[in-house]
Length: 158
Image (tube, helix red, strand yellow):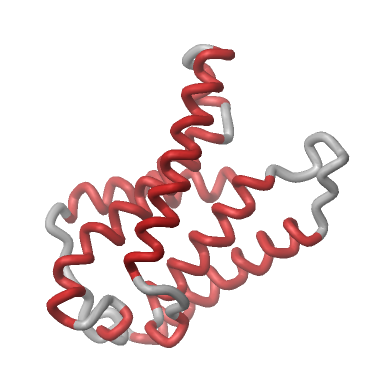
């Protein structure tokens, strides 16, 4: 069983990431090329808010179905961007571009919300668990692999 304070610490880290992303969006100067990448900062902001809500129930902002739609749209957007980059730059767009990691991030978040939707529907939602009991995933190995990729890309992206 995971102590609640650990989840609180991780949720705090997510809120710091959200604050940094929000500050970057506020300070963005869209007329300067390369000043900020709006789609990635918006994605970081949304992912951090969603993850904080997943970790600590009192930080939950939207219903799970709304997050599924948001991350479905982000997955489609970054999928489109990766395909466009791959047409222009070949396979190196997958290794060197900024869209491929965000495609994985968005798909991982979508998977987490979709995979937990069935157990959450029976138990009142993920946030209702309050950190004392986490719902189980149908394919935990896939979630673990997504989590590793998500963590690895996130460290390099900041």
